[in-house]
Image (cartoon, rainbow, N blue to C red; front, side, top):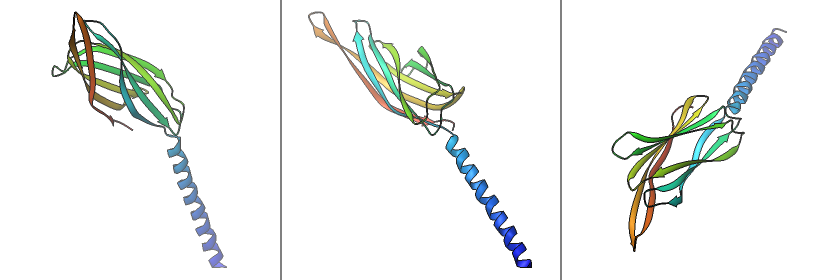
Length: 161
């Protein structure tokens, strides 16, 4: 008889431990995970003074709906460390298990730039990215011109989970 009491207590403890493990696992699955999976720079049009381009970011949200997403992009002249342009986009909430294409327009002259991208969720910085952009203006002869634009050293890193 006294063994039945110990077996019943053991079974009760086992059920409690399994319930705790299951609850922790289901809570972890409810947290979303953001990532920037790709970024491209699309040249739109050009004049003799500048080139217009669009930075295209692919932002993925997994497991659960995100909080409020905001993206800030700084365009800085390389080696000076001072921003010459700032773009801010309120994206809103992202659905779970979806990738969003986000477009940010920038205007650049014949110089080298750094592009800094900050991704916020509920006003908390989640992802920081950076890349170099080089713009070359070529004389095409007879008053013509041509721009070459290159994007290099692009990376993204998680700042906070």
